[in-house]
Image (cartoon, rainbow, N blue to C red):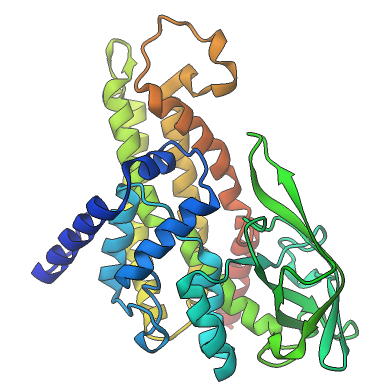
Length: 398
C-alpha cells in the first residue's frame, strides 16, 4: 500500500523499525499477535518505552509534550507498530481526553493533567455509555448536583473498557435535568478512589474481563474538575467522539490483519491447492485490500485536518463505518482460512489428521474474530453513524 513517500519518509520508517526491533520484547509481541490479552504491567511497560523515546503522544503539540508529527509520519508509525504486533496504546488519556483538555480545559487543568497522562501517573477510562444511553448517548441519566465546592454524582456507567486498571475516569453527567437532553450535560474528571465508586467486571464470552460497570453513589467531585462550562459537555463529548471514531478505524491493524490472512491462505489447502488460489476467496481478499487502500487515503485526509487543529467532521463517521467493516471482514477471512481449527472451544472434536495452517494462528484467529464483533457497536454503532451522516447531508443539501 505504497504512497508517494519521500526519502525522509523512508528514513523515518527505518528508524521506527529499528526502535521496535530494539525495544519491543518478542514475548510481548507474541501476546499481541495471539490475542492473549495484556496485563496492566504490559501496557505500562510499552507506555513508558514510547514516552522515553518521545513517541507517545504523536498527535499532541510540542508545547504539551507531544511529538507533533505530520500526517505521513503518524501513518508510517502506526502501520509499522501494527505490523510488529506492538501493543496498542490505551487511547483514553492520550487520544481522547488529551485533545479535549488542550482545546477546552483551563490552563491549570492542562498543566496538571497532561504531564500525568504522559508519565503514566494516571490511567484514564471513559464514562460515557449507560444501560439506557448507548447509541443515544444524550439520554444519559447519571446526575451531578452542585453542593458548594463539589458536585455530588449518582448513577451508573457501563461498558467501561479497562476500568479495572483506571485511577481516573472522565464522565458525562447530567447537571440540568430540566434542559433539553443535549443541553444539560457536563464533563467531569473523577478520581476512581473517591468513596462511593464501585467497579463491577463484566465477564465476556471467552471468560476474560475487558469491560466493566461503574456505579456512583453520592460521589463528591471538586468543582475544579469540571472541564469547560457547566451544561456544555455535549460539545466536548462530540469533539472527543470524532477522535475516538477516527482511532477505531485502525488502518495499521487492518494492514497487519490482511498480511496474516494472506500468510494463512498460502498454507491452507482448498481442493488440493493453496486457498489463496481459490477464485472466490482470492476475490474477497482483493476486494478488502482495495477497500483498505481507499480508506487509508481517506484516513490521511482526516488526520491532516486534525493535525491542523480542526476536529474531524462528518467524515469520521464514514471512516468509523468503513474501518470497522474492513476489520471485521479481515477477521472473517482469517477464520474461514483456518477452517475447523478456528473452534478453540471444541478442539477435541476436530479431526486430528487435518493439516493446521499454523497452530499458533488458529486460536488467535478465533479470538480476534469474536472480539472484533464489537467494533461496529462501540464508539457509536454503525447504524447511528449512518443516520448522523444522512442527516448532515440533508442539511447541507438545503
